Amino acid sequence: MQPEHGVTVALEPASPGVIAVTDLAPSGAGPHAETLGLVGESAALRDLCSRIAAHAKSSATVLIRGETGSGKELVARAIHRLSPRVSRAFVPHNFASIPDTLVESELFGHARGAFTGAHADRPGLFEVADGGTLFLDEIGDASASVQSRLLRVIQEGEVRRLGDGRTRRVDVRIVAATHRDLAAESRAGRFRADLFYRLHVLALDVPPLRHRREDIPALAAHVLERLARRDGLVIRGLRPEALERLRAHDWPGNVRELEAALTRAAYLADPGGIIAAHDLGADLGGAGPLLVRERHATLRGRTLAYEAELIRTALDAHRGNRSRAARALGLTRQGLWKKMRRLGVCGSADPAD
Image (tube, rainbow, N blue to C red; front, side, top):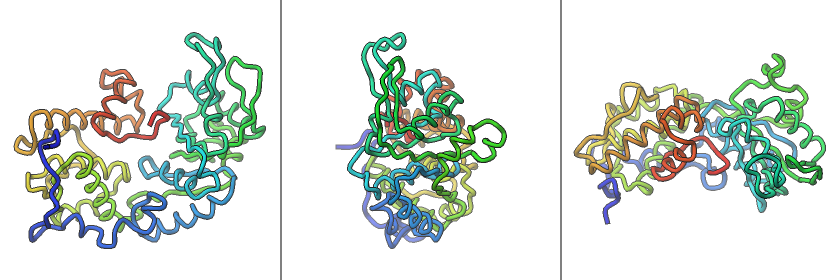
């Protein structure tokens, strides 16, 4: 049966003058891909993985710092995977993707009747993560009231649901992440200093992609192989000049931007499955939606690819914030999430992921 994009997976070798996908990373995805989910073997990545392994042994809070799209959630999951808490839940929460009015209920839970629509008792993410790891992504976006409640939970190890006078003990390891300079935010009065010190017990800096360019071929192979499995795209290889463009780009959006660029290029590539330099577009960061070539896919495939590209562009424009991207696209947040799941569009981490 043909996939809905009208193409099939090709396993035959690439032609002369083309770098086959399998040749992009002759030694594979790297020594940490299977155990930690981190692709590459650069010195910067090896150092990061070594520090992950050391920090995973502790129960202390960890603050992960890194640019948007650099893989902070992957690092958090790797910490959990190597920790004594691996048999319990890893629970992610992204402050940039949930409206402030819902954050406290999401994190701390609520009692029946606590507010309009609270028809039943509901545990928060702290209770869901009991015994495991709670990942607080983009912690710098937390409101002042949420920061105050977070500080109390971390200090006391107790959580109280909204509208409920009873406290509950929780044993949760906090791993937080941010693209902001929280020390500077704290000095400026925009982030509680006492919470910063509670979070900044152990720290990890995730290197941006431009600081580990030698990992780009392995990452490209990983993305293209996943596209072949997921979408059935014919991806046989890249022209050398296309690979040079990937290596030369600064990648302000990091691995997420690389994935988006390669996905666009894969849909634009000739039916032979060869990605040329021009398939990457004039601006690798994505100057706007791109139409898939008519000979590449069916009308339905082209329409779906165009819709997926519009969603990716909106998410990039709003730094992965689904609520804002949904508003820009004229959708509800739930409607956007449904479309992302149907189209296989990746976005920043969300509790519903």
